[in-house]
Length: 363
Image (tube, rainbow, N blue to C red; front, side, top):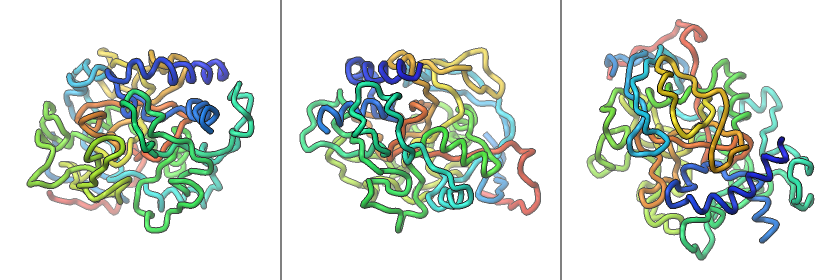
């Protein structure tokens, strides 16, 4: 089954996906470029109260009812009222420093750092099967926007510790969100920390921050407020002309942009964030109370690939190509594929965190 999945990933990514790219841009719907596709490319080329309760870098979100989904995006168009229970959520994405403490304590090795089994990549030269990850690296000449392999490159030894490859490191980026994390990596960190990954519904409820559910952005209907950028996204002509008007080429330190109404940072832009839900291209309208998503994954563009939902968009989102940093938008990622624009944050059930040392913050 795994071999069939890899083969179909190659076929759909390299042949079928470009046919759909104008309708559903790969930057958004194929957030994690599949490792199989990259290896193949290398072979060819080589509403709440105003009181926020905080604890240990988390915010207590008081449950309630909200309108989930968006009419702006095909896979989010089943807009329905959803009820969410109270939960804790990290105020920002997990940082390199936080992930480093996890690795130091456990000896954990991420998916991108592990040796690859040639049996899982039939037809690919075994000499190419070395640990690494996908890095945004646009070609000098971009021919249209239908083939994302023009700006994604598999870089040997790229990982959370070496975001652009073996010559890069985390010095000065300790407070940036950790990237190159597969779903398994994010889930493992969350379990170690006594937390879990958010459901898609929890994530969107928190991202809205009590704001108008019909607004285009999580912060309102204007891209900028008082002339200031509200999120780390791509300015200019994607993918090769980044004007960096927001001050960042890639990831930004967490908390660099304004928080939302719940005191949460980077719910739009910076890096995509893993959610616990399997991805399917529509919602189940019957799941209206603490929905946890479907029991299995299905993406018609890669039917055998196992995908989980991702939310929030990244520093690569741009209105001319990828708009899925906007309110209600969804993303998806193959669970074992990693890039330098995907990270995560954690949540916890209310009963799982101690109630002492709480800080009340009046907004």
